[in-house]
Image (cartoon, rainbow, N blue to C red):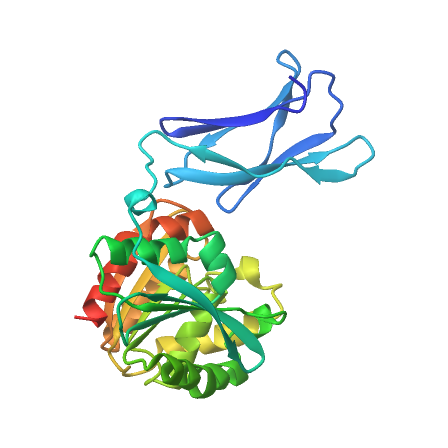
Length: 324
């Protein structure tokens, strides 16, 4: 059927196809965070095909890039491949704790805050708040984890990055100062907060680590998913990123610090993503500095669904450690 594409997981092999019985397309390319490759046209089947070794993952977000005869390209729309044995997190079906959402005005930005019915002084602050909630389901996880008794009640603060996300989340000293010495004190005051845990994914995780590195008393614990700890030796594919050199400089300084504040830190990273090497090295470096490090390699890539699937047991375990 023209215009129909799909994928299957057959043991250690992934197969992709896109139907084109009249051979109207000039090319079809697979795009995902773990695999990027061109499909080959099979005239006998009237379809574009690709078979490749299965990366160390249980599911894959992907789409096809379709090239027409005039050279123009368009996307096929997002799709998901689930391998046998993959299961969604159980907390997605768990009865949530009661709570309320509200807006909190902060300098230059707005935060959404979820608070449980029970009084608490515990706070989790997350970068990329809107996406972490919408695509990473952090708000649903919070209510479910509290409702099931897996963690003690806490406030969830979702920080919006604003239009300058790439700049401020890329080891920017000005943002680290703002977060640690302005935003967090305001959040603590308004929520009567005690121990605050910081969370982030990708550049958002890097920015949390950077703020805590510059201001060691900022957080009582950190939950860092697929942090962008770029290194020149490992991450040449990112060299075109505008703030690559600044991140490389900071990562080098962070890795070679003699001693850290020793707070609990949990790092997760997809086993099929490019950041795996630099996350492994950072986990080892932080352990050497006295941090209480847990590091988990998850069967996914650099995706919000992968980060969602790692919230339990990994964020659960960190919150238990910090708030015991």
